[in-house]
Length: 354
Image 1 (cartoon, rainbow, N blue to C red):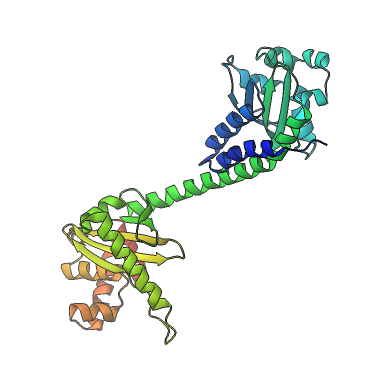
Image 2 (tube, helix red, strand yellow):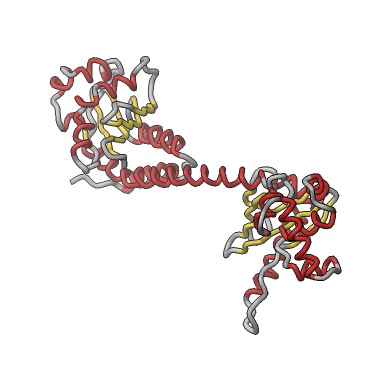
């Protein structure tokens, strides 16, 4: 049985690293077919996804220019392709060659060869299957003309198959996660929320669109001052939560004023990274709430309710009784046509206030 040499393994390692680093599935496909075409010298390398029920196909090929309709030709003759039909019938996904099933003369008699591979100047092919949906076949195929693929090349492809399969799973999961994150970020931005991820030193590793403009408006010099603010605050929270003398108080948000309004900052510390959520309230928020029917005092109280303050905390800050605060909240709910504080906050969000 053929075994990989140390030099083979050394040559494959950069390829494996490359496919695991793929940011999305199209990137993985490009890296896979391009890299395999070099590792196993081939004139063509292709990614094929064929739905055996509908005949629909997705096809990507790295190689010389092709004729129009080449992907349709593969789907049309898929039932003649010995490797595709074997993968359709068997869970086995090991590397297979066309010559494992057909002699060269028998292969040349097929419409598959006449309509596809003869026009690509291909006589030999080896393929490996990837995970796929029911009644579909997904594989990566390598093709050439000069000589058939040998057993050493089959061993190499089989050694890479688990990595190709796992990299495909990771790329698809990353793609889905990025899609969900995109929806989340757009939803947060619509409510004037921004998200950042900071390292232990307060350096920004990632941020949602618009976050840097908000930081620039409230911190000067923006990034360094903000980074120091986050670093010292995260350290203080860590000390507070590690106390053994008493149950620590809840972590409250910080408020930073600026020329265009007020910035509320929420911190979620982690072992390596800190998640930072910014919520900006523009200076004209209360004016717009008043246009929605609230008095100046009611707009102020609704803003404070949205910050999570209790009735007694609002009363202390405004120097009024907590019963008066309760009456104001009742009037706010009545004017906005809602029955609870949460619903009042949601109603205010719809006019871009909270």
